[in-house]
Amino acid sequence: MYIREAKDSKLNQVLYVERLAFGQDEEAELVRELLIDPSAKPILSLLAFKEDVAVGHILFTTAHLENSENTTKIALLAPLAVIPDAQNQGIGGKLIKRGLETLSESGVDLVFVLGYPEYYSKHGFKPAGCLGFEASYPIASEHSDAWMVQALRPDVIGSVSGKVICADAINKPKYWQE
Ligand SMILES: CC(C)(COP(=O)(O)OP(=O)(O)OC[C@H]1O[C@@H](n2cnc3c(N)ncnc32)[C@H](O)[C@@H]1OP(=O)(O)O)[C@@H](O)C(=O)NCCC(=O)NCCS
Image (cartoon, rainbow, N blue to C red; front, side, top):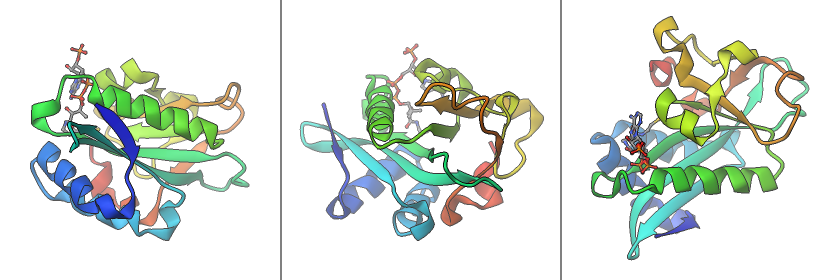
């Protein structure tokens, strides 16, 4: 298995992985929109390959804190997708790890995700609401733990807080119903 940055020429593989993993078109269409959304830039799009076949994809897009001076660099992880035949082989975890390492090298401070708490907590994410970070749209209280954050730099949590505003393409209520 190897991981590569997904260039524009790999769009069809990215969309194929998204469709197969989620079993529907919605996430693939979201990815397609995010990749051309100027407010999402810079982005980090990684594909995982097994025997030269794309089996996993992860996308990180730029976000910011509302009413802040935007000195804190923020990324949103969404979506993460591994095709059914390749699940439970550590590929999702490796995509997260590689993504976080790359973002850290480029100076990103905080990474947010809305997803399965049991899964993302294994990869260093913690519930974000109680740390002072509001999601773009309200998350139902029974799912509040699904809104999570990971700091890539010491001391950043506690020194900033507020509502996280994501790229225009994902800044729609339908994407925030966990
Ligand atoms: C969720 C997903 C990305 C995980 O990728 P993966 O490569 O199969 O995961 P990994 O191999 O890295 O990790 C497997 C572990 O995660 C756990 N896991 C998988 N899906 C999980 C879920 N929905 N909730 C909690 N844990 C989950 C597995 O039980 C396994 O646990 P173990 O290590 O204790 O045995 C993949 O199943 C997928 O693409 N699902 C469909 C799309 C989706 O839901 N994406 C996530 C959006 S937030």
